[in-house]
Length: 273
Image 1 (cartoon, one colour):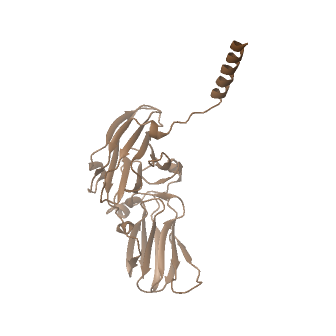
Image 2 (tube, rainbow, N blue to C red):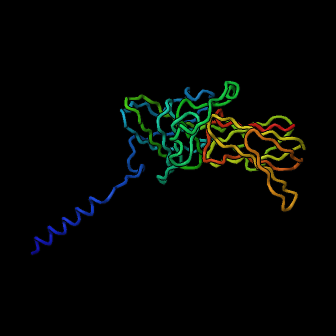
Image 3 (cartoon, helix red, strand yellow):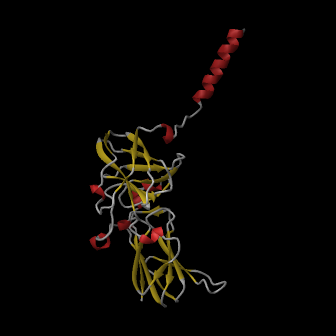
């Protein structure tokens, strides 16, 4: 009788276990541990790679990236090819993904390269940084360590270099907490991180023209507010639109979708005339 009950219990446990799906956190599945290094050059391929690997069809590799104390603003995680790139916070939660040099996005949305915009003209990116492959940027103090997964979803082997680089943002307004001046003429900025909001204070009244580059598929929007008039409603500009603004009004630029990109692919322009 005891043996029968034991066998019955064992069978019940086997049935329960067969119905369970075991999920292993990336924190517990690290293949390689690397450290981010500082690089200030203008060609990201000239930085030293954190690792070089050949991935077979359908294979992936998981990294733990240690982030040393730094005065640099940002951590650039990128590849020299357009493979699937996943970036996780120190808790193991997914932060962002990318499968293109053109953009990254929150969650798994960065793997949908069909939603990217058209390519930039050379004039748009001549003085701005560009990633050589899939790329995710986050603030340098956002997480330590950071976990990264690189996956080859193709049907053939691919050799890829992985880079973990500390450097400042190209858009200097990223490092400021307050509002930057918006004078007459053209002011440029970039949405280099998820949730990025760039703020400006209008220095002279006039017509403000707003435009954003399209390669990243970022849905740019500019919000105009009057901080001195109680109860006034904000006005909004989409890329390609303009509005009359007054001296002292505030302009904030952000993405309507959860996207960002390296500066050369996330430029916007505020032209005050």
